[in-house]
Image (cartoon, rainbow, N blue to C red; front, side, top):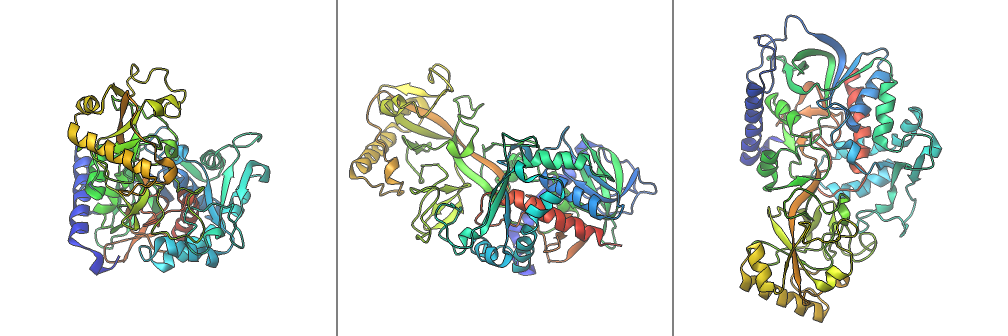
Amino acid sequence: MSEQELTRRNFLGLAGVAAAGAATLGLAGCAPKTDSAHAAGGGTPTSAPATWDEEYDVVVCGAGIAGLAAGICAAREGNGAKVLIVEKDVTPNGNSPFCAGSMLYCDDAEAFGVYLKAMLGDHTPDDVQKAFCEALTENLDWLYELGAKEEWLDIGAPATEPDPAKGAEWPELENWWTYGRIKFKTKDTDGPTHVHTFFEQTAENTENLTIEFSTPMESLVQDPETKTILGVVAGGKTYKANKGVIMCTGGFESDPDMLYNFTGVTGCVPYAGKANTGDGHRACAAAGAGFWHMYGGAQYWTALRNLDNTEFLSTVWNFTKKNLGITVGVSGRRFYMDYDACSCPTSPYAEPGSDIHLNMGYRHGITNFGGTWNHLPLPEVTWFIFDADAMATGEIFTDITDDPVADGWAYEAATIEELAGKIEVPAAELTATVAQWNEFCERGADMAFYRPADTLTPVKTGPFYAMRCVPAMLNTDGGPTRNAQGQILDPFGEPIPHLYSAGEFGSVWGHLYQGTGNVGECAAFGRIAARSALANE
């Protein structure tokens, strides 16, 4: 990030993160009560403790896929280097166990780089994109080096020319066919069935690698003069890191305050893990890190919930589509392209070479808004409205309930006016909205928000129904700015010595996103960061 990019908004927002870190540490009271251990989240840097509790060459914070990959690489390539991974949860966690498990890779870094550049633009520096692409070419071979067997893997190899059957996330963009994906098979195999399980098992069998669970990273230890990171405070103990600390603490999707401060959304319910609460962001902010991509991630879409807002209709995030009705806000009006399926009218996303400005649909929470693709700051509560014909199809609830009204999944009413009263929206507005929608259905074109023609299902047969919707997400991607070596940078682009990152913690994905990209990045930048740390004297 250049000095010019350090805007007032960024500065104030990140100052708030640092302040929150200080407040959190003050309340926790678990950092050493001496003037020698500097809690980076808690004030002015001081010198290192006279005696460290434990000493390692590399300390990794977080035991998701990124942290496990970084720890494995550092231990296996470190010529005897001692490596520690600290994890706040009781098992390796974060979002990793909940992800689909597909890992991005490529064979031709230069060719894939064209597609990546089309997705990321100038939001991520070219040298970082290049380093990422080059590291992706190593992902498959590295799995084999770690002991993965070919029969365990389902490999979708990169194509050398356009392949309409491939189905990239952005087939409108140049070189969309040049990426590949690796996934562990879920059956008919004697090996692990998920990439996270594979890395967990590999870490357990790696010499010189220690994992401490129930050991939350509380702060960084930093030299006050050189700004070099010397180690971490975790679980009330000080851990010296002679060569570096690698931050892999994931996102902040389970911190409502951070979500609101950086994305403007309240009431969000994450689909995946609940342990990612921005701990690492606060520690790095206090240590002087600059931040990027804070708006990025797989977010937001309006997901169907029960009326008590305690359970999702579906835990498969991209099948919470609403093609059998419309979504309205508390105003009773439609306000966006309210067909949530993660696809366009064509399968699975769009026709290769078609006009990206005209295509509709959701792609990991990114949607067409005025011809460009963005994350929308969705309302805290919305309502999915549908009729008896839609209910009769059996497509909405499948096997979750035999009586959705009695079981608290939906309101029922004889008229639209009565339904408006139950969900507390203006009856006149909801009635007008439904009437206009039915006109669009008769015309065969949604002239308000251009929903796909095959989703134009009228709402005209009573009784009528309403379901609660909330903004949902998978993960955030924003965090400390990272360079091509995996170093964390200050707001003016200078590396903070001995501080690195990998994975969704300050991800390279700052604009459009290709599915499988986060897992691929976890492995790629896990290795980059580990090797950079090992190079330190």
